[in-house]
Length: 407
Image (cartoon, rainbow, N blue to C red; front, side, top):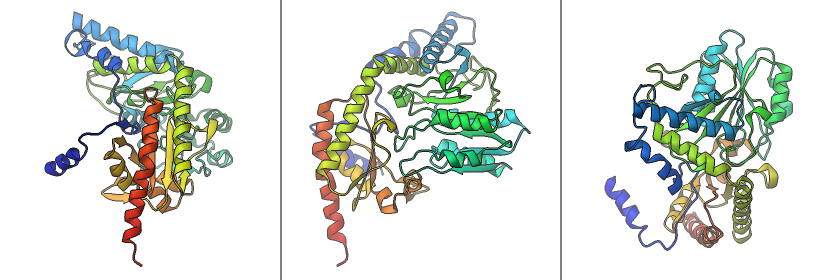
């Protein structure tokens, strides 16, 4: 296995240009963020923030300062509403399981959309197996929530609803405010959670204006370090811990806080909201250049998700007919363009994206999709290179597929 990987890496030698667009799954950490983290490994703040000595107080200080910065970016009413956890998956688990534990016997129904991330979908299905009713609200062909079906789904027995602010795969900006008005009108006691990981830093997001009860944000989705995220818990909303152990400054997540990662998350947040409108405009132009360039140059391509204002500024998801997505990611990688496929490998079986299936894509369309996400760090030259590489890669894959067909 190691030898196979080495051979693949050897095939990538002497690349003239590299463009990393797989920010859905991981992120390059910018120098400024890395520099913000490094002191807290060995120079200062390396102590446990609950202990009464200098390294502990330094750690406590940076954790509180970081929480304050992120609270400001989210529009929180109080810094205590920011709860650090190891990442998006953990935050979503804490939100759903912690809210259900706190709600206890007020009702037995939860509602999500049919295109929620797996860290919401799988947790909701686990809750269902424990005696709750689960309703999945459908979406239209662009991934927008069906608000009429939502009206039918929520009732007096509904204790929890979770909808993402932006779909992580096809970039659809969901009508969260309108959905929340429907939910609270039907049942004012229903707890509302949103996974805002793909909205944070890429849309104007204010948790007080939205009036959500719980919100998930992730560090690496804004070019911060992996392994850290946060759950916003509105003051007065009850959430119980889902893990037990030593409790530090974070009352909802036990264990010693990862001070360097928290410092990096705060710096990444600061950079994302610095020159915010300029950042959005830059990403939007790169996104549209990529979409328009590929669809103009390559025949039989379909954009997944909406165009324009309903699409988040960083997301490009395209389906290429007669072209398998996994094969295309490999071909692009050999030219230094790094993307992800819309086909999810689950239990070693290549399966089409459930999100693309939910919006009406055929299996062959879903299997032929690739996902790319631009950032404020990408340049026009980067996108020009991608537009040079993609048509050649698609032509080569289609040529192989065509030559292997039985005649």
